[in-house]
Image (cartoon, rainbow over all chains, first blue to last red; front, top):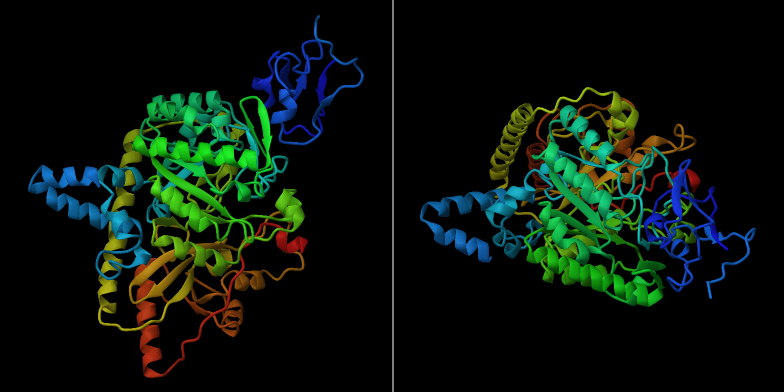
Length: 74
Length: 520
């Protein structure tokens, strides 16, 4: 139910942090991380996940398959 | 024009001021009103006439906005703005090498508070540092809070330092009033196209209002916002420089259109820069093998736009954390660790005293050039040639050939000496020179020049240069560049006229691309 940031690819540019509608992104050990408990994949907010849309490195903000996909509350 | 008309009408006494300002503006472009006046190579007459006193005051100490000033005054960038909102095919944000100098590259990011401390530390150490710019490494206006917080802190602690910023323009219209509020009077916008079809080949995407746009749609959005932002800034009297990256085969011919579009919207200066593109940079253009322009291609485009407006030719395409004169980079002296340990003594009076000394030096240099120019007054010749100069700054021939990291290039004609560019010759990122003969790379970089002026040169390179047809000149060591170049040119013409030598055209030269040569 969340996205994750591939740390080895993250340039730590911080572009994603202010775009997250859930304030789920923060800096940790020099790169940025997404709190899976807060991430909603931007469902209900925007057409596409904002971190993915603004990230300068392709395939860096990706769906974390270790969690089930986010379901919008009914 | 309007402001100048008011100025002229103010009183009889102000007329003298106007002519002084005109002279000063002419000097700023590297051409005296005696000698080269009226030539397109000195910038358009309209451009000079449009410049009121207050604009001259704004640019005269800004090394990026005044070629003449860049020999004397330094700038610094603080890397407080890491985020970007567009993707350019010539940029790769993952790349950072401390030895690599190009936009978008930094070694460490700073908080606004660290940046303010760094500015004070540099200002105390380098009294001729007059300008603080925010140029990334992302886009300053994609990080508005950090950018404006930095301006706020610096305007309080170091009010004499000019603030400027460099942006891709996407969000510029939203921030124009804030920019004006901080008295930022220099803004650079990177505009590589005004045709979205061409833009689509340069920009894969832009991020705008919570959505990623691609292709022609993205480029259309970007160009509309850039031109709107430019108009809004010039309406408010903020000086705008337009940077354009020359990408052969993509936008090289089109940049003439860009030049007209930005000129008509009031841009003050146009800076056409060569594409920096090497495979190891990991940029799209680097990986597709897109080449940059040769020295002649770049100069021809700059020359063709010069009739329209002032062209910047002294840009070093510096890093987003560069410190020092444009041709040098002292950023390694001012890392965060070193700054925090530094005793900062920001003394406005001693800075002013030092800058007054710089002004004296500058006036002496201009006077020497003017005097030398009179010796060319009666000369009739169509010969135009380039010479390279080894300099550490102050407008003097004061660098040894072997120590030069770059050569400044002047075009000589009966109109005088005109700065037309520079050539980097240092070899970055390779831990020594490898197989490459460093003298060969120097010769390739200045191959279009007839002579190279140096403070000193060894016998060996002297012979090799002569073999390559480049005259090594060390007789003007530690003298003013322009005065010496004019004197040398006069002697050259005399020799051509007497039949002692024959004037031959030189070939093209190579623009250095960082580590490209070792990779090739």
